[in-house]
Image (cartoon, rainbow, N blue to C red; front, side, top):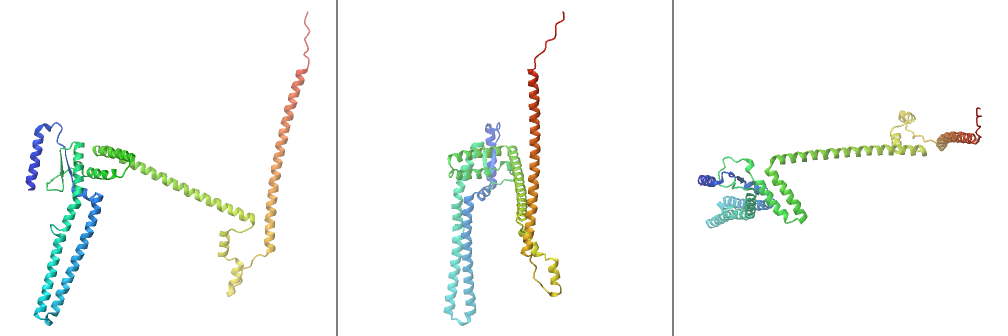
Length: 354
């Protein structure tokens, strides 16, 4: 049958060529229905549900087989104790259970069973969508023939460039998305679809677009890494600034920072080590309040002396600047006055020679 079908296709191609179509050439494509069905979301979801049902039916069959095996084992064990009527009755029961099991298997998994029927019902809408999409693609892109690779047609070789299965999947997916989109989104979707169709016709353009997308992704990653590095550096600077501020505040108030206290608590002093020698543990000596007060007053005094020295230095600089400014103004006034005096002096005429 397959051989006759292939011969019929070849005859059709020969007749098509002989009818004046050689100028353009015959454009042939093919689809893989199994591949399309595996990549259509609706079919995949329904197929999973059907497989779950089939799995449940198989579990019921296995449970029925176990039940029949138990009846057979019980009869074999008790056969010597039973009468002929009871044995016949149990054998009849086992035979009835086996017949019921076979009927259930045929009903679920037979040629006309529930599994095959539901598969046909499941595939039919997708097949209709595929046929519609194939017709649209054939008319739009001027295909003369489109075959189904998974059908009875024997294809000894098929170049990948003639495979339009992905275009069919996109066409089906587009139709589903259009039902859920607004007008603006529809325009954007149509533009995207047009670009995808152009890429199908021009592989070089698709490769160029992919290279640009890869370059953009690399640039985005570089910017993101740079941003993370800047944030980490900023955080490090903020931590250092905060630590310096805490140290200045501690120095100002005469207190010890928390981390310094922790280190002091962890590392005992030499006096404490001496006190613990020989098994005698003595409590650490705390500084007296007088010592604390003197330390604070010395620190305060040192700070006041530094502030006074700094204020005196600023005052001296200010005084020097004022003196320099006053001297410049005085020199300028003196020069101006000398110029005015010179202008006021009367001009003397020279005597004329006779």
